[in-house]
Image 1 (cartoon, each protein chain N blue to C red):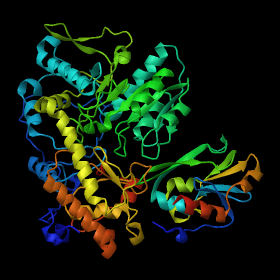
Image 2 (spheres, one colour):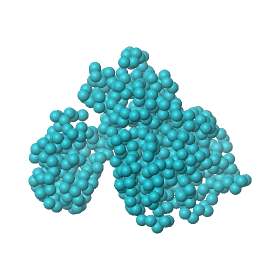
Image 3 (cartoon, one colour):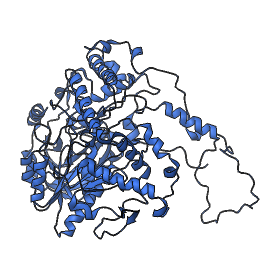
Image 4 (cartoon, helix red, strand yellow):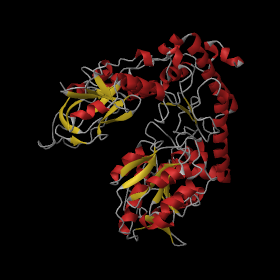
Length: 497
Length: 133
Protein backbone atom coordinates (compact mmCIF):
# COMPACT_ATOMS: atom_id res chain seq x y z
CA UNK A 1 0.00 0.00 0.00
CA UNK A 2 1.44 3.33 -0.96
CA UNK A 3 2.03 5.76 1.89
CA UNK A 4 -0.01 8.67 0.60
CA UNK A 5 -3.07 6.52 -0.06
CA UNK A 6 -3.54 6.54 3.71
CA UNK A 7 -3.90 10.33 3.72
CA UNK A 8 -6.79 11.96 5.49
CA UNK A 9 -9.51 12.93 3.05
CA UNK A 10 -8.95 16.63 3.78
CA UNK A 11 -5.41 16.29 2.41
CA UNK A 12 -6.53 14.88 -0.93
CA UNK A 13 -6.55 16.96 -4.10
CA UNK A 14 -10.30 17.43 -3.82
CA UNK A 15 -11.06 20.02 -1.15
CA UNK A 16 -14.40 21.66 -0.50
CA UNK A 17 -14.88 25.40 -0.82
CA UNK A 18 -17.87 27.72 -0.89
CA UNK A 19 -20.15 26.69 -3.75
CA UNK A 20 -22.74 29.28 -4.72
CA UNK A 21 -26.25 28.23 -5.61
CA UNK A 22 -27.58 29.38 -8.92
CA UNK A 23 -31.09 29.39 -10.34
CA UNK A 24 -32.09 28.80 -13.92
CA UNK A 25 -32.03 31.93 -16.08
CA UNK A 26 -35.83 31.70 -16.24
CA UNK A 27 -36.01 32.03 -12.48
CA UNK A 28 -33.81 35.14 -12.48
CA UNK A 29 -34.54 38.66 -13.75
CA UNK A 30 -37.72 40.70 -13.98
CA UNK A 31 -39.97 41.60 -16.89
CA UNK A 32 -38.59 44.62 -18.69
CA UNK A 33 -34.99 44.27 -17.49
CA UNK A 34 -32.36 44.19 -20.24
CA UNK A 35 -28.64 44.06 -20.87
CA UNK A 36 -28.47 47.39 -22.65
CA UNK A 37 -30.64 50.36 -23.47
CA UNK A 38 -30.97 51.31 -27.10
CA UNK A 39 -31.23 55.07 -27.56
CA UNK A 40 -34.17 56.50 -29.46
CA UNK A 41 -33.00 56.67 -33.07
CA UNK A 42 -35.95 58.68 -34.32
CA UNK A 43 -37.18 55.79 -36.46
CA UNK A 44 -40.89 55.05 -36.09
CA UNK A 45 -41.81 51.61 -34.70
CA UNK A 46 -43.22 49.32 -37.35
CA UNK A 47 -45.03 46.14 -36.33
CA UNK A 48 -44.04 42.81 -37.89
CA UNK A 49 -46.33 41.52 -40.65
CA UNK A 50 -49.16 39.51 -39.09
CA UNK A 51 -48.11 36.24 -40.77
CA UNK A 52 -44.77 36.13 -38.94
CA UNK A 53 -45.77 37.89 -35.72
CA UNK A 54 -46.63 35.81 -32.65
CA UNK A 55 -45.99 35.59 -28.95
CA UNK A 56 -42.45 34.29 -29.46
CA UNK A 57 -40.52 32.20 -26.94
CA UNK A 58 -40.52 33.14 -23.29
CA UNK A 59 -36.98 34.53 -23.00
CA UNK A 60 -36.13 35.76 -19.54
CA UNK A 61 -35.49 39.52 -19.16
CA UNK A 62 -32.03 39.87 -17.58
CA UNK A 63 -29.34 42.44 -16.91
CA UNK A 64 -25.78 41.93 -18.13
CA UNK A 65 -24.51 41.31 -14.58
CA UNK A 66 -27.17 38.66 -13.97
CA UNK A 67 -26.04 36.78 -17.05
CA UNK A 68 -22.35 37.12 -16.18
CA UNK A 69 -22.92 35.88 -12.62
CA UNK A 70 -25.07 33.02 -13.87
CA UNK A 71 -22.43 31.59 -16.15
CA UNK A 72 -19.52 32.39 -13.84
CA UNK A 73 -21.18 30.50 -11.00
CA UNK A 74 -21.97 27.56 -13.23
CA UNK A 75 -18.34 27.52 -14.35
CA UNK A 76 -17.22 27.05 -10.73
CA UNK A 77 -19.17 23.79 -10.58
CA UNK A 78 -17.32 22.54 -13.61
CA UNK A 79 -14.22 20.35 -13.85
CA UNK A 80 -11.86 20.71 -16.80
CA UNK A 81 -8.36 19.72 -17.77
CA UNK A 82 -7.24 23.16 -16.51
CA UNK A 83 -8.60 22.13 -13.07
CA UNK A 84 -7.15 18.66 -12.62
CA UNK A 85 -6.35 15.19 -13.92
CA UNK A 86 -8.93 14.19 -16.53
CA UNK A 87 -8.04 10.63 -17.65
CA UNK A 88 -11.12 10.03 -19.81
CA UNK A 89 -10.10 7.04 -21.94
CA UNK A 90 -10.44 7.25 -25.71
CA UNK A 91 -10.97 11.02 -25.42
CA UNK A 92 -7.35 12.28 -25.13
CA UNK A 93 -8.08 15.11 -22.73
CA UNK A 94 -4.61 16.63 -23.02
CA UNK A 95 -3.80 20.15 -21.94
CA UNK A 96 -4.57 22.83 -24.55
CA UNK A 97 -1.54 25.18 -24.56
CA UNK A 98 -2.52 28.84 -24.22
CA UNK A 99 -0.26 29.85 -27.11
CA UNK A 100 -2.85 28.26 -29.43
CA UNK A 101 -5.42 30.76 -28.16
CA UNK A 102 -2.96 33.62 -28.63
CA UNK A 103 -2.40 32.66 -32.26
CA UNK A 104 -6.12 32.22 -32.91
CA UNK A 105 -6.86 35.67 -31.50
CA UNK A 106 -4.43 37.50 -33.81
CA UNK A 107 -6.69 40.15 -35.38
CA UNK A 108 -5.84 39.17 -38.97
CA UNK A 109 -7.21 35.67 -38.28
CA UNK A 110 -9.91 36.41 -35.71
CA UNK A 111 -11.40 39.22 -37.80
CA UNK A 112 -11.26 37.51 -41.20
CA UNK A 113 -14.71 37.25 -42.76
CA UNK A 114 -15.60 33.89 -44.32
CA UNK A 115 -16.75 35.63 -47.52
CA UNK A 116 -13.39 37.33 -48.18
CA UNK A 117 -12.12 36.75 -51.72
CA UNK A 118 -9.04 34.50 -51.89
CA UNK A 119 -6.73 37.45 -52.55
CA UNK A 120 -7.78 39.13 -49.31
CA UNK A 121 -7.10 36.12 -47.06
CA UNK A 122 -3.85 34.67 -48.39
CA UNK A 123 -2.45 34.18 -44.85
CA UNK A 124 -5.46 32.14 -43.74
CA UNK A 125 -5.38 30.03 -46.91
CA UNK A 126 -1.67 29.43 -46.40
CA UNK A 127 -2.33 28.14 -42.87
CA UNK A 128 -4.94 25.71 -44.21
CA UNK A 129 -2.74 24.57 -47.10
CA UNK A 130 0.29 24.00 -44.87
CA UNK A 131 -1.87 22.34 -42.23
CA UNK A 132 -3.04 19.77 -44.80
CA UNK A 133 0.59 19.06 -45.67
CA UNK A 134 1.60 18.72 -42.00
CA UNK A 135 -1.20 16.27 -41.22
CA UNK A 136 -0.44 14.15 -44.28
CA UNK A 137 3.26 14.08 -43.27
CA UNK A 138 2.54 13.11 -39.66
CA UNK A 139 0.85 9.89 -40.82
CA UNK A 140 2.86 9.31 -44.00
CA UNK A 141 0.04 9.73 -46.53
CA UNK A 142 -0.29 11.71 -49.78
CA UNK A 143 -2.81 14.51 -49.13
CA UNK A 144 -5.40 15.78 -46.65
CA UNK A 145 -8.64 17.74 -46.35
CA UNK A 146 -9.62 19.90 -43.38
CA UNK A 147 -13.32 20.06 -44.23
CA UNK A 148 -14.88 17.47 -41.87
CA UNK A 149 -16.24 19.21 -38.79
CA UNK A 150 -15.67 16.47 -36.21
CA UNK A 151 -14.47 12.90 -35.78
CA UNK A 152 -17.65 11.17 -36.95
CA UNK A 153 -17.84 13.58 -39.88
CA UNK A 154 -14.25 12.62 -40.79
CA UNK A 155 -15.28 8.97 -40.69
CA UNK A 156 -18.21 9.73 -42.95
CA UNK A 157 -15.92 11.62 -45.33
CA UNK A 158 -13.47 8.69 -45.42
CA UNK A 159 -16.16 6.11 -46.05
CA UNK A 160 -17.90 8.29 -48.68
CA UNK A 161 -14.57 8.42 -50.54
CA UNK A 162 -14.17 4.63 -50.31
CA UNK A 163 -17.76 4.17 -51.59
CA UNK A 164 -17.11 6.66 -54.44
CA UNK A 165 -13.93 4.79 -55.37
CA UNK A 166 -15.79 1.45 -55.59
CA UNK A 167 -18.66 3.03 -57.56
CA UNK A 168 -16.21 4.60 -60.01
CA UNK A 169 -14.56 1.20 -60.49
CA UNK A 170 -17.99 -0.35 -61.09
CA UNK A 171 -17.58 -2.73 -58.14
CA UNK A 172 -20.71 -3.70 -56.20
CA UNK A 173 -20.00 -3.65 -52.48
CA UNK A 174 -22.55 -4.31 -49.73
CA UNK A 175 -20.53 -4.96 -46.57
CA UNK A 176 -17.65 -3.63 -44.51
CA UNK A 177 -15.55 -5.40 -41.87
CA UNK A 178 -14.91 -4.00 -38.43
CA UNK A 179 -13.49 -5.54 -35.25
CA UNK A 180 -15.78 -5.85 -32.23
CA UNK A 181 -13.60 -3.31 -30.41
CA UNK A 182 -14.77 -0.59 -32.86
CA UNK A 183 -16.14 2.76 -31.70
CA UNK A 184 -19.92 2.95 -31.98
CA UNK A 185 -19.68 5.59 -34.69
CA UNK A 186 -18.07 3.08 -37.10
CA UNK A 187 -21.18 0.96 -37.78
CA UNK A 188 -23.29 4.12 -37.98
CA UNK A 189 -20.93 5.57 -40.61
CA UNK A 190 -20.94 2.34 -42.60
CA UNK A 191 -24.75 2.31 -42.60
CA UNK A 192 -24.81 5.92 -43.88
CA UNK A 193 -22.72 4.74 -46.85
CA UNK A 194 -25.03 1.79 -47.54
CA UNK A 195 -22.78 -0.89 -46.08
CA UNK A 196 -23.75 -3.61 -43.65
CA UNK A 197 -21.33 -4.09 -40.78
CA UNK A 198 -19.62 -7.49 -40.50
CA UNK A 199 -18.01 -7.94 -37.08
CA UNK A 200 -14.57 -9.50 -36.89
CA UNK A 201 -14.03 -11.13 -33.48
CA UNK A 202 -10.77 -10.04 -31.85
CA UNK A 203 -8.12 -12.60 -30.97
CA UNK A 204 -6.85 -13.64 -27.53
CA UNK A 205 -4.34 -10.79 -27.25
CA UNK A 206 -7.13 -8.23 -27.78
CA UNK A 207 -6.26 -7.54 -31.41
CA UNK A 208 -7.29 -8.33 -34.96
CA UNK A 209 -5.84 -11.45 -36.54
CA UNK A 210 -5.11 -11.96 -40.22
CA UNK A 211 -6.75 -15.40 -40.20
CA UNK A 212 -10.09 -13.99 -38.97
CA UNK A 213 -10.06 -11.29 -41.66
CA UNK A 214 -9.13 -13.81 -44.37
CA UNK A 215 -12.22 -15.82 -43.54
CA UNK A 216 -14.61 -12.89 -43.90
CA UNK A 217 -13.13 -10.71 -46.66
CA UNK A 218 -14.92 -11.40 -49.94
CA UNK A 219 -15.66 -9.65 -53.26
CA UNK A 220 -18.77 -7.86 -51.90
CA UNK A 221 -16.87 -6.37 -48.97
CA UNK A 222 -15.80 -2.74 -49.39
CA UNK A 223 -12.86 -3.09 -47.00
CA UNK A 224 -12.23 -2.69 -43.28
CA UNK A 225 -12.63 0.03 -40.67
CA UNK A 226 -9.96 -0.32 -38.03
CA UNK A 227 -8.79 1.78 -35.11
CA UNK A 228 -5.06 1.56 -34.42
CA UNK A 229 -4.16 1.38 -31.62
CA UNK A 230 -7.54 -0.14 -30.80
CA UNK A 231 -9.93 0.73 -27.99
CA UNK A 232 -8.19 -1.72 -25.65
CA UNK A 233 -5.02 0.36 -26.05
CA UNK A 234 -3.39 -2.46 -28.05
CA UNK A 235 -1.41 -1.83 -31.24
CA UNK A 236 -2.81 -3.76 -34.24
CA UNK A 237 0.53 -5.28 -35.22
CA UNK A 238 -0.94 -7.44 -38.02
CA UNK A 239 -2.47 -4.46 -39.81
CA UNK A 240 0.10 -4.29 -42.65
CA UNK A 241 -0.59 -7.93 -43.57
CA UNK A 242 -4.33 -7.45 -43.13
CA UNK A 243 -4.25 -4.39 -45.42
CA UNK A 244 -2.35 -6.33 -48.08
CA UNK A 245 -5.02 -9.03 -48.00
CA UNK A 246 -7.86 -6.45 -48.15
CA UNK A 247 -6.24 -4.76 -51.17
CA UNK A 248 -5.63 -8.08 -52.89
CA UNK A 249 -9.37 -8.85 -52.59
CA UNK A 250 -10.47 -5.47 -53.94
CA UNK A 251 -11.10 -3.61 -50.68
CA UNK A 252 -9.76 -0.43 -49.07
CA UNK A 253 -8.62 0.29 -45.53
CA UNK A 254 -10.18 3.01 -43.38
CA UNK A 255 -8.23 3.82 -40.22
CA UNK A 256 -10.08 5.51 -37.40
CA UNK A 257 -7.58 8.04 -36.03
CA UNK A 258 -9.29 8.38 -32.65
CA UNK A 259 -6.22 6.95 -30.94
CA UNK A 260 -3.59 8.78 -32.98
CA UNK A 261 -2.11 10.25 -29.81
CA UNK A 262 -0.15 7.03 -29.31
CA UNK A 263 1.58 7.04 -32.69
CA UNK A 264 2.01 10.60 -33.99
CA UNK A 265 5.07 10.83 -36.24
CA UNK A 266 6.00 7.25 -35.31
CA UNK A 267 3.84 5.09 -37.52
CA UNK A 268 3.74 5.39 -41.29
CA UNK A 269 0.10 4.73 -42.16
CA UNK A 270 1.04 4.49 -45.85
CA UNK A 271 3.37 1.57 -45.15
CA UNK A 272 0.67 0.02 -42.96
CA UNK A 273 -1.56 -0.04 -46.07
CA UNK A 274 -4.04 2.58 -44.85
CA UNK A 275 -5.98 4.35 -47.62
CA UNK A 276 -7.66 6.96 -45.45
CA UNK A 277 -7.35 8.02 -41.82
CA UNK A 278 -9.21 10.70 -39.90
CA UNK A 279 -7.79 12.96 -37.21
CA UNK A 280 -9.50 14.47 -34.19
CA UNK A 281 -7.77 17.84 -33.86
CA UNK A 282 -9.66 18.31 -30.57
CA UNK A 283 -7.94 15.20 -29.21
CA UNK A 284 -4.47 14.62 -30.63
CA UNK A 285 -3.75 18.23 -31.65
CA UNK A 286 -4.69 19.94 -28.35
CA UNK A 287 -7.65 22.04 -29.47
CA UNK A 288 -10.56 22.65 -27.08
CA UNK A 289 -12.64 19.58 -26.41
CA UNK A 290 -15.99 19.16 -24.81
CA UNK A 291 -18.40 21.96 -24.10
CA UNK A 292 -18.78 22.48 -27.81
CA UNK A 293 -15.14 22.55 -28.96
CA UNK A 294 -15.86 22.95 -31.82
CA UNK A 295 -14.24 19.74 -33.00
CA UNK A 296 -12.49 19.17 -36.28
CA UNK A 297 -12.00 15.83 -38.06
CA UNK A 298 -9.66 16.19 -41.06
CA UNK A 299 -8.83 13.20 -43.24
CA UNK A 300 -5.55 12.17 -44.88
CA UNK A 301 -5.54 9.81 -47.86
CA UNK A 302 -3.18 7.67 -49.91
CA UNK A 303 -2.80 8.13 -53.67
CA UNK A 304 -5.82 5.91 -54.51
CA UNK A 305 -8.27 8.30 -52.85
CA UNK A 306 -6.74 11.71 -53.66
CA UNK A 307 -9.17 12.30 -56.60
CA UNK A 308 -12.16 11.81 -54.25
CA UNK A 309 -11.15 14.37 -51.57
CA UNK A 310 -13.87 16.92 -50.68
CA UNK A 311 -13.84 20.08 -52.76
CA UNK A 312 -13.07 22.83 -53.29
CA UNK A 313 -9.42 22.10 -52.49
CA UNK A 314 -6.87 24.71 -51.49
CA UNK A 315 -4.18 24.98 -54.16
CA UNK A 316 -0.92 26.92 -54.38
CA UNK A 317 0.55 27.88 -57.76
CA UNK A 318 3.89 29.06 -56.37
CA UNK A 319 2.64 32.64 -55.89
CA UNK A 320 -0.87 32.59 -54.51
CA UNK A 321 -3.28 30.30 -52.67
CA UNK A 322 -6.74 29.74 -54.14
CA UNK A 323 -9.77 27.46 -53.87
CA UNK A 324 -10.21 25.09 -56.79
CA UNK A 325 -13.15 22.95 -57.88
CA UNK A 326 -11.19 21.23 -60.64
CA UNK A 327 -11.68 17.64 -59.42
CA UNK A 328 -14.41 15.79 -61.28
CA UNK A 329 -14.43 12.78 -58.91
CA UNK A 330 -14.57 14.78 -55.67
CA UNK A 331 -17.29 13.76 -53.19
CA UNK A 332 -18.09 17.48 -53.00
CA UNK A 333 -18.35 19.99 -50.20
CA UNK A 334 -18.76 18.76 -46.61
CA UNK A 335 -18.60 22.09 -44.78
CA UNK A 336 -19.47 25.69 -45.47
CA UNK A 337 -16.76 28.24 -46.20
CA UNK A 338 -13.29 27.13 -45.01
CA UNK A 339 -14.18 24.44 -42.43
CA UNK A 340 -13.47 24.92 -38.71
CA UNK A 341 -10.79 27.50 -39.41
CA UNK A 342 -10.18 28.56 -35.80
CA UNK A 343 -9.68 24.94 -34.77
CA UNK A 344 -7.30 24.18 -37.64
CA UNK A 345 -5.34 27.31 -36.70
CA UNK A 346 -4.97 26.23 -33.05
CA UNK A 347 -3.83 22.79 -34.18
CA UNK A 348 -1.36 24.39 -36.62
CA UNK A 349 0.04 26.38 -33.71
CA UNK A 350 0.39 23.15 -31.70
CA UNK A 351 2.12 21.22 -34.46
CA UNK A 352 4.58 24.05 -35.20
CA UNK A 353 5.25 24.52 -31.46
CA UNK A 354 6.31 20.88 -31.13
CA UNK A 355 7.94 20.38 -34.52
CA UNK A 356 9.55 16.93 -34.80
CA UNK A 357 9.07 16.57 -31.03
CA UNK A 358 5.46 15.60 -31.72
CA UNK A 359 6.79 12.04 -31.66
CA UNK A 360 8.02 12.64 -28.11
CA UNK A 361 4.49 13.69 -27.11
CA UNK A 362 3.25 10.29 -28.31
CA UNK A 363 6.11 8.51 -26.55
CA UNK A 364 5.27 10.19 -23.25
CA UNK A 365 1.54 9.46 -23.66
CA UNK A 366 2.39 5.76 -23.98
CA UNK A 367 4.86 5.90 -21.07
CA UNK A 368 2.29 7.57 -18.80
CA UNK A 369 -0.39 4.99 -19.61
CA UNK A 370 2.02 2.16 -18.90
CA UNK A 371 3.05 3.81 -15.62
CA UNK A 372 -0.59 3.88 -14.48
CA UNK A 373 -1.07 0.31 -15.70
CA UNK A 374 1.91 -0.91 -13.69
CA UNK A 375 0.94 1.02 -10.53
CA UNK A 376 -2.67 -0.20 -10.48
CA UNK A 377 -2.09 -3.74 -11.70
CA UNK A 378 -2.13 -5.42 -8.30
CA UNK A 379 -5.24 -3.51 -7.18
CA UNK A 380 -7.58 -3.81 -10.16
CA UNK A 381 -8.22 -6.61 -12.65
CA UNK A 382 -6.35 -6.11 -15.93
CA UNK A 383 -8.11 -8.23 -18.58
CA UNK A 384 -5.38 -7.86 -21.23
CA UNK A 385 -2.20 -8.06 -19.20
CA UNK A 386 0.43 -6.72 -21.60
CA UNK A 387 2.14 -3.40 -22.26
CA UNK A 388 -0.35 -0.89 -23.61
CA UNK A 389 -0.25 2.12 -25.90
CA UNK A 390 -1.80 5.44 -24.80
CA UNK A 391 -4.50 3.96 -22.52
CA UNK A 392 -5.10 0.99 -20.27
CA UNK A 393 -8.31 -0.89 -19.52
CA UNK A 394 -9.08 -2.30 -16.05
CA UNK A 395 -12.31 -3.86 -14.75
CA UNK A 396 -14.23 -4.08 -11.48
CA UNK A 397 -13.80 -7.88 -11.28
CA UNK A 398 -11.71 -7.72 -8.04
CA UNK A 399 -14.23 -5.40 -6.37
CA UNK A 400 -17.39 -7.29 -7.41
CA UNK A 401 -17.28 -9.56 -4.37
CA UNK A 402 -17.70 -6.48 -2.18
CA UNK A 403 -20.74 -5.45 -4.27
CA UNK A 404 -18.76 -2.55 -5.66
CA UNK A 405 -19.11 -1.80 -9.37
CA UNK A 406 -17.18 0.37 -11.81
CA UNK A 407 -19.68 3.21 -11.39
CA UNK A 408 -19.12 3.30 -7.59
CA UNK A 409 -15.34 3.37 -8.06
CA UNK A 410 -15.38 6.32 -10.42
CA UNK A 411 -17.97 8.28 -8.44
CA UNK A 412 -15.61 8.02 -5.44
CA UNK A 413 -12.79 9.41 -7.60
CA UNK A 414 -14.81 12.63 -7.92
CA UNK A 415 -14.77 13.00 -4.11
CA UNK A 416 -10.99 12.72 -4.22
CA UNK A 417 -10.61 15.47 -6.82
CA UNK A 418 -10.20 13.60 -10.11
CA UNK A 419 -12.33 13.33 -13.20
CA UNK A 420 -13.50 9.73 -13.72
CA UNK A 421 -12.01 7.64 -16.52
CA UNK A 422 -14.26 6.32 -19.31
CA UNK A 423 -16.50 3.53 -18.01
CA UNK A 424 -18.27 0.53 -19.55
CA UNK A 425 -16.38 0.96 -22.83
CA UNK A 426 -15.10 -0.89 -24.83
CA UNK A 427 -18.16 -3.12 -24.73
CA UNK A 428 -16.09 -6.30 -25.11
CA UNK A 429 -14.83 -5.79 -21.54
CA UNK A 430 -17.39 -6.18 -18.74
CA UNK A 431 -17.26 -3.30 -16.22
CA UNK A 432 -14.47 -1.54 -18.11
CA UNK A 433 -12.48 1.33 -16.57
CA UNK A 434 -10.54 2.93 -19.41
CA UNK A 435 -7.75 5.25 -18.32
CA UNK A 436 -5.92 7.61 -20.69
CA UNK A 437 -3.67 9.97 -18.74
CA UNK A 438 -2.13 11.69 -21.84
CA UNK A 439 1.41 13.04 -22.02
CA UNK A 440 0.68 16.31 -20.28
CA UNK A 441 0.34 14.91 -16.73
CA UNK A 442 3.45 15.21 -14.55
CA UNK A 443 4.67 12.23 -12.52
CA UNK A 444 3.39 13.79 -9.27
CA UNK A 445 -0.10 14.06 -10.73
CA UNK A 446 -0.01 10.50 -12.04
CA UNK A 447 1.11 9.33 -8.59
CA UNK A 448 -1.69 11.26 -6.89
CA UNK A 449 -4.24 9.73 -9.26
CA UNK A 450 -2.87 6.20 -8.75
CA UNK A 451 -2.87 6.71 -4.97
CA UNK A 452 -6.51 7.75 -5.10
CA UNK A 453 -7.38 4.63 -7.12
CA UNK A 454 -5.46 2.44 -4.65
CA UNK A 455 -7.23 4.11 -1.74
CA UNK A 456 -10.57 3.35 -3.41
CA UNK A 457 -9.64 -0.31 -3.90
CA UNK A 458 -8.94 -0.49 -0.15
CA UNK A 459 -12.19 1.31 0.71
CA UNK A 460 -14.11 -1.13 -1.50
CA UNK A 461 -12.85 -3.92 0.76
CA UNK A 462 -13.14 -2.18 4.11
CA UNK A 463 -16.08 0.18 3.75
CA UNK A 464 -17.94 -0.27 0.47
CA UNK A 465 -20.78 2.00 1.61
CA UNK A 466 -18.53 5.05 1.13
CA UNK A 467 -18.34 4.07 -2.53
CA UNK A 468 -22.04 3.38 -2.89
CA UNK A 469 -22.84 6.85 -1.49
CA UNK A 470 -20.20 8.73 -3.52
CA UNK A 471 -19.83 11.46 -4.50
CA UNK A 472 -20.67 13.19 -1.22
CA UNK A 473 -18.32 16.17 -1.37
CA UNK A 474 -19.67 17.71 -4.56
CA UNK A 475 -22.33 20.41 -4.81
CA UNK A 476 -24.87 17.75 -5.73
CA UNK A 477 -24.55 14.06 -4.88
CA UNK A 478 -24.96 11.10 -7.21
CA UNK A 479 -27.22 12.14 -10.05
CA UNK A 480 -30.04 9.93 -11.26
CA UNK A 481 -28.58 9.13 -14.68
CA UNK A 482 -31.48 6.84 -15.52
CA UNK A 483 -34.11 9.51 -14.88
CA UNK A 484 -32.03 12.04 -16.83
CA UNK A 485 -31.91 9.67 -19.81
CA UNK A 486 -35.57 8.64 -19.55
CA UNK A 487 -37.10 12.05 -18.89
CA UNK A 488 -34.63 14.71 -20.02
CA UNK A 489 -35.50 18.35 -19.28
CA UNK A 490 -33.41 20.39 -21.68
CA UNK A 491 -34.85 23.90 -21.53
CA UNK A 492 -36.44 26.32 -19.12
CA UNK A 493 -40.11 27.05 -19.55
CA UNK A 494 -40.20 28.53 -23.05
CA UNK A 495 -43.97 28.89 -23.23
CA UNK A 496 -45.67 32.18 -22.50
CA UNK A 497 -48.62 32.29 -20.15
CA UNK B 1 -24.68 -6.66 -9.77
CA UNK B 2 -26.27 -9.97 -8.86
CA UNK B 3 -24.33 -13.14 -8.17
CA UNK B 4 -25.37 -16.12 -10.27
CA UNK B 5 -27.26 -17.66 -7.35
CA UNK B 6 -29.24 -14.44 -6.86
CA UNK B 7 -30.67 -14.47 -10.38
CA UNK B 8 -34.34 -15.06 -11.00
CA UNK B 9 -34.50 -17.95 -13.47
CA UNK B 10 -38.02 -19.38 -13.92
CA UNK B 11 -38.32 -22.96 -15.18
CA UNK B 12 -41.35 -22.43 -17.46
CA UNK B 13 -39.44 -20.59 -20.19
CA UNK B 14 -36.59 -21.56 -22.50
CA UNK B 15 -33.38 -19.58 -22.87
CA UNK B 16 -31.05 -18.59 -25.74
CA UNK B 17 -27.28 -18.10 -25.50
CA UNK B 18 -27.72 -14.35 -26.01
CA UNK B 19 -29.90 -14.26 -22.86
CA UNK B 20 -33.34 -13.93 -24.44
CA UNK B 21 -36.15 -16.14 -23.07
CA UNK B 22 -39.27 -17.47 -24.80
CA UNK B 23 -42.44 -19.04 -23.30
CA UNK B 24 -42.63 -22.81 -23.54
CA UNK B 25 -46.15 -22.72 -24.99
CA UNK B 26 -48.53 -20.23 -26.66
CA UNK B 27 -48.76 -17.31 -26.39
CA UNK B 28 -45.06 -17.30 -27.25
CA UNK B 29 -43.69 -14.26 -25.47
CA UNK B 30 -40.05 -13.19 -25.80
CA UNK B 31 -38.02 -11.13 -23.35
CA UNK B 32 -34.55 -10.93 -21.81
CA UNK B 33 -33.38 -12.85 -18.76
CA UNK B 34 -32.73 -11.43 -15.31
CA UNK B 35 -29.02 -11.86 -16.05
CA UNK B 36 -29.29 -9.69 -19.19
CA UNK B 37 -31.23 -6.87 -17.50
CA UNK B 38 -28.84 -6.96 -14.54
CA UNK B 39 -25.77 -6.73 -16.81
CA UNK B 40 -27.24 -3.89 -18.85
CA UNK B 41 -28.32 -1.84 -15.84
CA UNK B 42 -31.22 0.62 -15.85
CA UNK B 43 -32.74 0.66 -19.30
CA UNK B 44 -33.54 4.00 -20.88
CA UNK B 45 -34.82 3.03 -24.33
CA UNK B 46 -36.39 -0.02 -25.94
CA UNK B 47 -36.69 -0.39 -29.71
CA UNK B 48 -39.01 -3.15 -30.95
CA UNK B 49 -40.04 -4.36 -34.43
CA UNK B 50 -43.32 -3.73 -36.27
CA UNK B 51 -46.11 -6.26 -35.83
CA UNK B 52 -46.26 -8.80 -38.69
CA UNK B 53 -42.53 -8.66 -39.31
CA UNK B 54 -41.23 -12.11 -40.26
CA UNK B 55 -37.83 -12.97 -38.80
CA UNK B 56 -35.42 -15.87 -39.01
CA UNK B 57 -33.73 -17.46 -36.02
CA UNK B 58 -30.94 -15.19 -34.79
CA UNK B 59 -32.28 -12.09 -36.58
CA UNK B 60 -32.05 -8.81 -34.73
CA UNK B 61 -35.50 -7.78 -33.52
CA UNK B 62 -34.68 -4.65 -31.59
CA UNK B 63 -32.30 -2.90 -29.22
CA UNK B 64 -32.08 -2.22 -25.52
CA UNK B 65 -30.29 0.92 -24.42
CA UNK B 66 -29.12 1.53 -20.86
CA UNK B 67 -27.03 4.22 -19.24
CA UNK B 68 -24.06 1.89 -19.86
CA UNK B 69 -24.51 0.56 -23.37
CA UNK B 70 -26.68 -0.44 -26.31
CA UNK B 71 -27.40 -4.12 -26.98
CA UNK B 72 -29.06 -5.86 -29.89
CA UNK B 73 -31.88 -8.34 -29.32
CA UNK B 74 -31.81 -11.60 -31.27
CA UNK B 75 -34.81 -13.80 -31.90
CA UNK B 76 -34.27 -17.29 -30.38
CA UNK B 77 -36.40 -19.06 -33.05
CA UNK B 78 -37.89 -18.11 -36.41
CA UNK B 79 -41.37 -16.57 -36.44
CA UNK B 80 -43.74 -13.72 -37.18
CA UNK B 81 -44.19 -10.87 -34.72
CA UNK B 82 -47.81 -10.82 -33.51
CA UNK B 83 -47.61 -8.23 -30.72
CA UNK B 84 -45.13 -5.83 -29.13
CA UNK B 85 -45.26 -4.62 -25.54
CA UNK B 86 -45.86 -0.91 -25.95
CA UNK B 87 -45.79 -0.43 -22.18
CA UNK B 88 -42.05 -1.16 -22.03
CA UNK B 89 -41.39 1.43 -24.72
CA UNK B 90 -43.02 4.07 -22.52
CA UNK B 91 -41.46 2.70 -19.34
CA UNK B 92 -38.26 0.71 -20.06
CA UNK B 93 -37.80 0.19 -16.30
CA UNK B 94 -40.39 -2.63 -16.51
CA UNK B 95 -37.73 -4.80 -18.14
CA UNK B 96 -35.47 -4.28 -15.13
CA UNK B 97 -38.25 -4.66 -12.58
CA UNK B 98 -40.07 -7.68 -13.99
CA UNK B 99 -38.16 -9.21 -16.92
CA UNK B 100 -40.41 -12.29 -17.25
CA UNK B 101 -43.74 -10.53 -16.51
CA UNK B 102 -44.57 -6.89 -17.26
CA UNK B 103 -41.20 -6.55 -18.96
CA UNK B 104 -41.90 -8.96 -21.85
CA UNK B 105 -40.90 -7.54 -25.23
CA UNK B 106 -42.72 -9.22 -28.13
CA UNK B 107 -45.07 -12.07 -28.92
CA UNK B 108 -44.41 -14.30 -31.92
CA UNK B 109 -46.06 -17.01 -33.91
CA UNK B 110 -43.24 -19.52 -34.32
CA UNK B 111 -42.55 -20.84 -37.81
CA UNK B 112 -42.19 -24.19 -36.09
CA UNK B 113 -43.31 -24.40 -32.43
CA UNK B 114 -41.14 -27.47 -31.93
CA UNK B 115 -38.08 -25.18 -32.25
CA UNK B 116 -38.77 -23.99 -28.69
CA UNK B 117 -37.77 -27.31 -27.17
CA UNK B 118 -34.41 -27.07 -28.94
CA UNK B 119 -33.48 -24.10 -26.69
CA UNK B 120 -31.87 -24.36 -23.25
CA UNK B 121 -33.96 -25.24 -20.23
CA UNK B 122 -33.21 -23.54 -16.93
CA UNK B 123 -30.58 -26.08 -15.87
CA UNK B 124 -28.74 -25.83 -19.18
CA UNK B 125 -28.94 -22.01 -19.03
CA UNK B 126 -27.51 -21.96 -15.49
CA UNK B 127 -24.64 -24.07 -16.73
CA UNK B 128 -24.16 -21.71 -19.68
CA UNK B 129 -23.98 -18.74 -17.28
CA UNK B 130 -21.48 -20.53 -15.05
CA UNK B 131 -19.26 -21.41 -17.98
CA UNK B 132 -19.29 -17.95 -19.52
CA UNK B 133 -18.88 -15.90 -16.32
